[in-house]
Structure formats: structure tokens, C-alpha cells
Length: 115
Image (cartoon, rainbow, N blue to C red; front, top):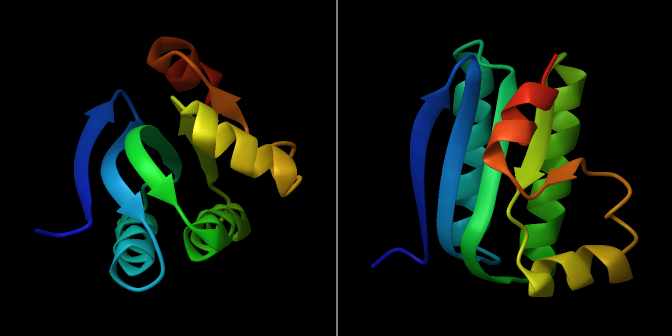
């Protein structure tokens, strides 16, 4: 059983990645990286990561979120976060990254926020 499962779906022109499990050093962060890079390679520049079912993120996972965000921006895209658990929110706050990411609690408003 993979630590992280990623399901891809479209909400209009926004690609939603529903993540569940753990984003940790090794497999989880690599899977996330490959999923985001794959979307960008396909010309999908509006990416919403739904973290509602992610129960654990380590420092490597946080690093991968930042790296995915940066890569997406550098390619003229937008990457936003949806449904942060309290744990992940606290982690992003401690690491001062909450200000870097645009985060949303509702998918509808998140999708609408992409321009």
C-alpha cells in the first residue's frame, strides 16, 4: 500500500489532486513531485492540492509542497492548497509558509479564485 494516494480530477479548467495518506521523505514526496510535474508537462497550469485526507507531512513533504509551488509559478501556473488539516496548518504556520501558499477551505471558492 503506497503511503500517498493521488486522484486527479477536473473542476472546470482547474486540476484538482485529491491527496490522501502521508507526504514524507522518499515515496510520498516523489509521487507528489511527479504528479505536479506531469500536469505542468501537459500544460495544466491551474493546480489545486486537496490535503483534506493527508494525515501526516514531514519536513521533506513540506519541502516538496514548496518546490511544487515554485516550479508551478516559474512555469506561469498557480498552485493552491485546499482543506488543510489543523496539523498541516500549524506546521505551515511554524515554518512561516502559511503566507507563501494561497489556502482555501472550500473547493468552490478555491476554483473560482484561479484567474
